Length: 407
Image (cartoon, rainbow, N blue to C red):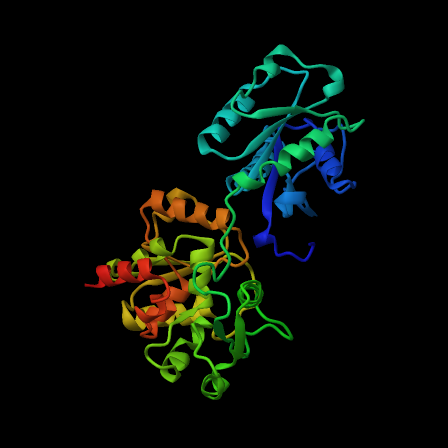
């Protein structure tokens, strides 16, 4: 369980005022002293993430956050902002508040914000040994409340059961091949081993796709692009689907029969993590980038960059060659604010394999609100290498959408 990728875990955010018992509660959930506990306000400074298995919920990332009232100085405000970003991508929220004190204006505002968003939430009334004041009894009527005494453990069993009860209400990510293959079919994966490939291992989208092939009771063949012709001709059964690394699109497309269904890991993950239709529509707006325009390449993780790095070299080179040469590219790992985004004319996102679907959908919603089109690495490379609309054929709705925009 601890090796389950963070991007595949449910995100449970523990949120509340300073000294409301968040870190103590986190330790009780984890059954260990993972978070530092102190009576001193502001003990937790940055969000701290812990992994655990939680019954029907499965693998969970428990995020202990700084108090959202820790805004007395610039440093405190930065802590609050970081914690707030975790709230934005939460699958489930534990709203922690003392049972023996009336709700603050900030708590009332937060409860309303969570209600409007429709985020699954439990209100945890800590310091249960000190009694329950009337104001807290009627606080946040939209959410279930559970009283907990962090010192004695009273109420923790009820909290565990309530959390597990949310399993059916949490929107989970689809698997990479959901709806694309049937049991017994063959899937061929093309995985180039070049200078950018990690040493002695495979990248996360490849690993997850392999596991999904096994889970779906399918047969798998795997090859590099150099051995693809030999591998393909040696198969007894024609693959139902071929998935390649985006950067080998041209070589793979030239080898395979024209009627062989073909797509990329990045496109598969664009559907898994986000909104493939949004990315397809954004791709059709490349020509709208004006002379002197700014394009943001948005990645979700940090990694060592090679001389032919996809985000800083290959994508800019393709765009300047095929669309417009006089544009500026910038690369970021953190999503800019809605106001900052308005200075860009296009955003090209990575596959998002290292973030949750909630995180990617939050990025997409911010792009929509800012009125900035966005697309995806895999789609852009498929377009740049002449593999569209072919690379969208496994996805009938998005294939028709692309053809409609291209007419």
